[in-house]
Image (cartoon, rainbow, N blue to C red; front, side, top):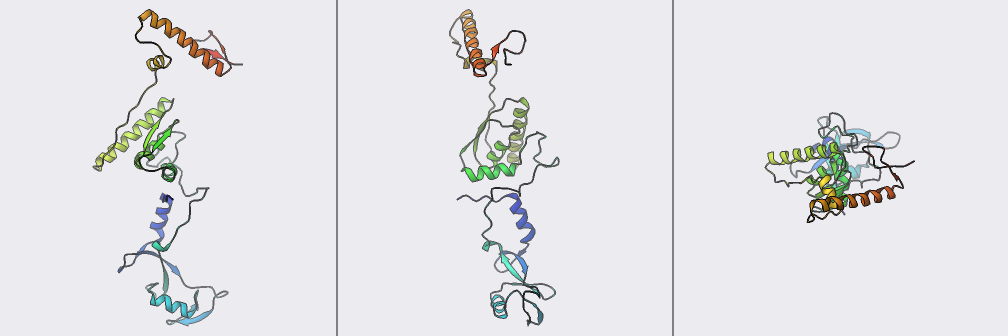
Length: 248
């Protein structure tokens, strides 16, 4: 079972578990042991008369176990140690992950950007270090950023030039930050499936003479176009400069 502590849980611990026991170094928060008059019995203990959450015998036991944190006003408060709390399993609806504000450090101004903490939770819960993470609509590169920081390999693609540029810039910034911290980082490569790669993809033989290659390219290109038009149930057209087919 993998456990992933979100940034929301970290902030909760920092806010409420503010005390450290001097002798043991254990972190704890203090809880009130004062009850309600309508529910708890009022009696005197250690010079204090009030409704107590526990009976006198239990208060004495807790006092002997050094489970009370005494305030400046002489009030006892129960010490709830962090290492004794099992925590709560992550639920299927996540409300503890903050959305990206315009002033967030990770904001890239990409319209569909997701919070990095969201992807860190998903990747951390569903993979191990060294695993390969794939994203074929990479957008702003959040998955790659989270994968890199969690020591996962990654591969992805996107048709949009803005997406590739945003992702590249983001990953370079990660490398610079790691370098400034004297930490190692991995190189990455950007491959462009452009005109020449497309020619190779549709199978033009590079060993043919130029006229033969051109002829084969036209044949292969026509077959490739026919395949695409058939897949979309479209009909070919020569009316436009930038469109090869139309539908409806």
